Figure (cartoon, rainbow, N blue to C red):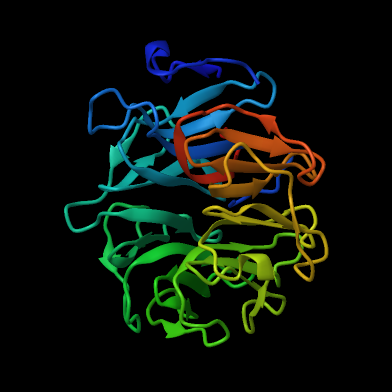
Length: 337
């Protein structure tokens, strides 16, 4: 595994050479949010953790930001790629200079942050999905307030802004899907999907009417009408915990999903039919993402057994290493200026 300035060589058994919430731009960088869990050395602290960027030219992984013990994801301001926010176990950490310097911008009341979304029309308006509900900042992260009006369960795994109408947001939590049409002032349950814990929520880019949700113990749900109605798909996954779902930013008919003891399942017809991909080294999948830069490429991370990519819809997989890592999220960031 090629890791530059990240993990001491002594902590990893093998170093060999050999990538979602996607930004479909020609020039974007792939990130992984992870904790190195498999290679512990008599310590309760993970060997390494944080955000890694993957170079498509060299295959190397480089760190972005501090080595905080728990970072679930990273988000960039769509209007200013140098403004970066880390979703951390102890709050939100921000950089305003493309990752050169970082500062925690939350206090003791804000913690267990799992995903961050930034208004594409107003970079000062930031939303954080947390274990305690939704936190909102309207001043670029300097101050935060709770926005849980209408929620009957606070533990939120994900939050997505409707780019076509930034006043509309969808929230994935352990009681189902909730929707706000007033920038999180109020929430109402989305009745189109059953009351089930939603573990991952993604939206199509080439066709924003397409949404996919991975659930706890109920498999995958698909919407083709902008999250109004939902349908359970992929019968082979109907009782699975699905931790990773993805919509190809280049073709919203291409979908992917994976979870615990499921391997990777793929659809090329918008979710009507599904096929199981060639087995990875482990069937326990924690994150999947289609490549924003390379059409048709799919990335998948397994629990502690490496990260892989395929260019032929799962017939063959190539290793991108990271053996021993527990990957929470894979995605793409716009290139920093």
